[in-house]
Length: 124
Image 1: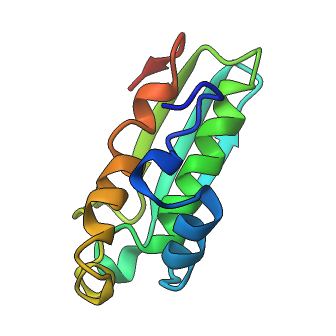
Image 2: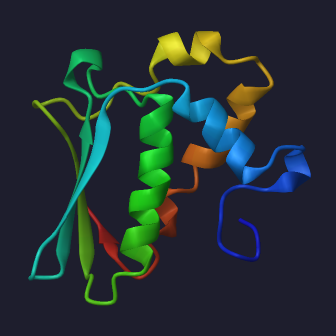
């Protein structure tokens, strides 16, 4: 993380906007967030045609949803689920194949720590 809490870092030679731009070139699916009055949020990985595999756009969307959860002062916990009775098959291999090999570690840098950012909230 950078001092701002972002998973993006120029230390790898890429800016946050540059990484987002590359990832957004691979659309499809969504990350849906429902914050309930009870303080429990439901985060749904939603890309059933690809067994909920993460597209590039979904990776960006996930980072944005986690930021919303971090700022949700009434939040107590998060349930992470996949749409259509499938959790998540990983990353969409069509996107991974199309990404220059140098981008693959950056995708890992982006995705790996995102869910751990839900500090102070129970992750179910």
